[in-house]
Image (cartoon, rainbow, N blue to C red; front, side):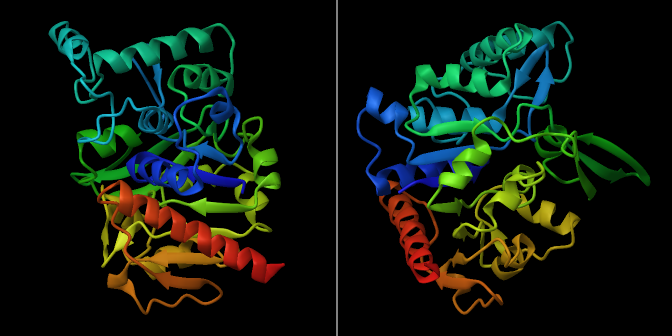
Length: 326
């Protein structure tokens, strides 16, 4: 079964780990696993930022580290056994910003990426090269090779200004009231090589429990990607349980675009033209969305077993709906 997963952030990466287990592609790393096309991930690059001359791609790296065994599982981001000497030294020199947690091990990845981009390689080729080391067992593609950055229009002390999403998310913890999200560069961006082909060849598309505004939502900002999925069987997993985000501050993002922090409201926002099926938690059993088949089951990915079970439920629903469509 060939599955495409638009993903970003910790929830998306952990769901992918369960999906690999559910599909039986989590065997020890091998050449066969590396080239296995059963899972193609379209990674969000709207969170990308350039700091200290380095191009940082948080969501691509979180997927790569999580599936490659290098992630700090307690934090859900960054490298395990990480240290922050470089960050401390930069601060000692008075270099800004000081709010971004640039780890020493992680910095090596950013240096390699920066050098390859400076040499003229597109982000898709850079990502493939980085994955040669980590062997994530999926095909990881950036949503675009073009530079797209999410900026947040915020209001502070009666003044409106725009800041990079990372500053809003990390420095301010999404506490500044957001008025708008702007995907700078998205209108002219093109899907990265292989993205539309993967969607065309997919048996199903699964939306993991990622932020619907600035993770999955950012992927859909690139013209052509969402449209390519409209004739596919698409199943999503709600990132909202009982009126609250499973993790992070998605409620602040949803509020900014006028969408309630509710499993049903998120499905309506994604659209019945896109979604065929929607998994909600048992706390939200009874949720109904016109035009979408809604099922309830436990959504908390509290351990490998529950994560695999959730991914298997998404695959089973996609298979059922695909067969019904046929």
